[in-house]
Image (cartoon, rainbow, N blue to C red):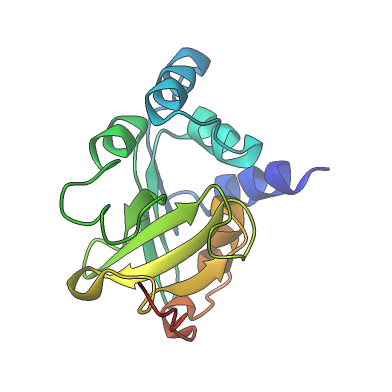
Length: 159
């Protein structure tokens, strides 16, 4: 069984407890967003959209609200934050003080589509934290109760 499929099984078991599911997206909607963004989303992320077009995980130590496809295009590029984290794709927030973003081109050297979190008041690479290899693993970490908001800062010096 693929890691992506295991996550969907896990999400399905957690529904109503940790996961707030939304209506699924269609292949056409995903492809339209990919065209607008100019990139192809990873397979696991695509599968998650086909299961639920956005949604919210609330684990014991973190909350992640993953954007719907509509929100994904509205926040990318974001007029407030995108210039502070160039090349990144904002994928959601914690319904509070933090945003989550992906690095599709591996600029930060943690792997293509690695996920980072940063406070809305200090959006920069220096104050970002690496939290997962991709959106699928981010969901798994939240479900497992990991303290993702306590990861160390990247401390990248920006030019």
